[in-house]
Image (tube, rainbow, N blue to C red; front, side, top):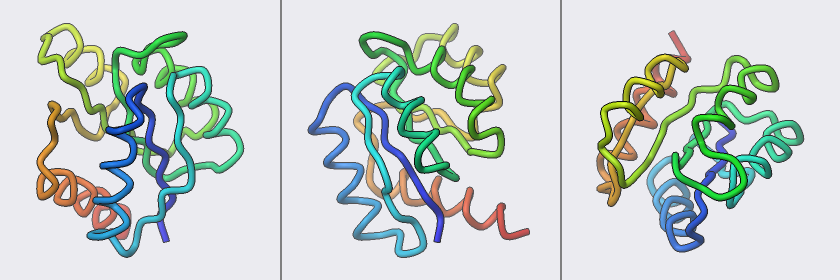
Length: 125
């Protein structure tokens, strides 16, 4: 079972992602949530996730900054950024951090499921 945390400042987004993962990804368990990057680091330290779904623009600490610090906490975790912004600077920054994916909101459920399946299947190989 893979452990996943959802990091987004919009509670409705977190709930939607949790629903999709719970319903369509039986080999993934949502083990934590956070509304900003600073809390995400605390949650990651506690639950040691395999996968992190992270928004980029959030209060307190951005998703990009949180991802930099998260590498020290859970270096093997796969980070997928989910954001409403297609800003090229964000895409490049995410790539430089070794992001496993970058999706634009609103994320279609089948795209999220497909991305998660790619990650879990690649971890098996």
